[in-house]
Length: 154
Image 1 (cartoon, rainbow, N blue to C red):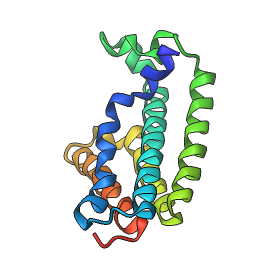
Image 2: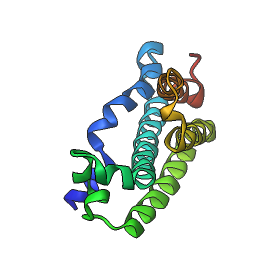
Image 3: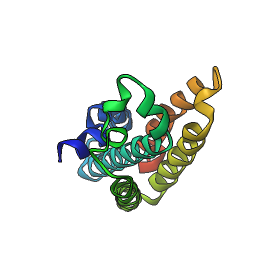
């Protein structure tokens, strides 16, 4: 279980707090808005973990050669490739379901985040400057999911 938690990188979930900025600054603290924002936050945690798993799958061979990354669960063999792929699929399904519960519009932001990160993981992380823009777009998508996605003007 420790290896799975490590693979999902929950310590990175703090970034998903950007989803909550809309309700905070709009002072929309009613139960519906807060529930939608919380669900959007959870959906982003799930899709972010899916992205980490996907990235580890894509980078497994280079990570095995890296002095620190070789200790990660996938390159070290603590988690099999099959389990990693099942986790990736389950996380995506859950992320889209939870996003839909928040608001179908949130699903669009989750989808955009995942699609952008597919391209990032496959090649764009190696393009100078563009990698920074892609990472920053993830923060913008979080903010938009927590505003437009739940009916708050950004």
